[in-house]
Amino acid sequence: MTILVAYVPRPEGQAALDKGIEIAGRRKEALVVVNTSRGGSGEDPSMADVQDVERVEKLLMASGIDATFKQFVRGKSAIEEIEEMVDSLRVSLVVIGLRKRTPVGKLFLGSVAQDILLTVPCPVLAVKAG
Image (cartoon, rainbow, N blue to C red; front, side):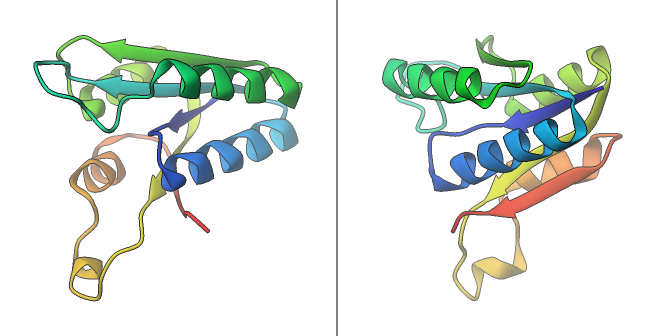
């Protein structure tokens, strides 16, 4: 089985990555870390830059688990990419990070987090950044 981490280069993405590494090591499962963007003309803050990709790959290598990092810019939403990976891999768990919200913002999850929770057919673990 495989654990899938939806990674963004922010504290909540790091929290999801850390938890994914921990769980994959404990369960002796493979780990796939995915970072995705639709692409387009503007900068996407969800897209990891070269330095962040290298940092994550070094962290995965040092973890001692069977882990890979995948980055996609194929015109699909993060939800579509994650759903396709859940369907094509034997995913036992999806790990996502949640960012801190204001009192009003707590009424709503982020749209990507909410869509993942509602659409993927496997368990989803949502972790908060420290």
